[in-house]
Image 1: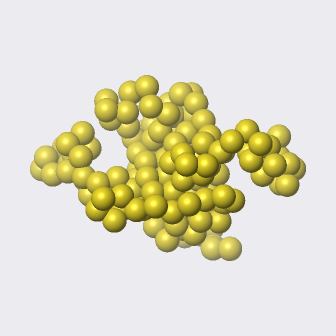
Image 2 (image 1 turned 180 degrees about the horizontal axis):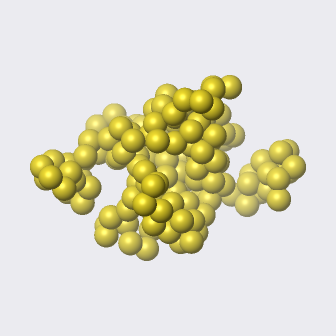
Image 3 (image 1 turned 60 degrees about the vertical axis):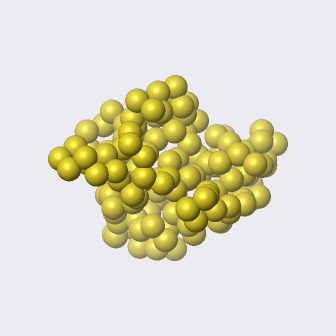
Length: 140
């Protein structure tokens, strides 16, 4: 297990996502990784888009990762904290997901990243798979 004294890394996203059960790794049209459970995406490495740009240069971010979240309140908790690296754009209004720039992933600990990935997986897995996974860990 990685040390908690360091920030999370992009490799941690891949390792943890692939470590969840019943995960399929697909690749988008530009080779971008997409992690799915039961045919539903839970982590998506996004290609540059006009809604996520550097406010100073107008350049499209090329390192945005989308994580699904269980609820709107979870989304707000992650995006309204001024110290959080997570954000959203108007394009994602009403969509249960948050965005994170890969270049900011080190602002999270590996444990924080693990929790976000597990929540993303749980929000998209079937109820049966989610119950089984939680039961195996004695989680509510």
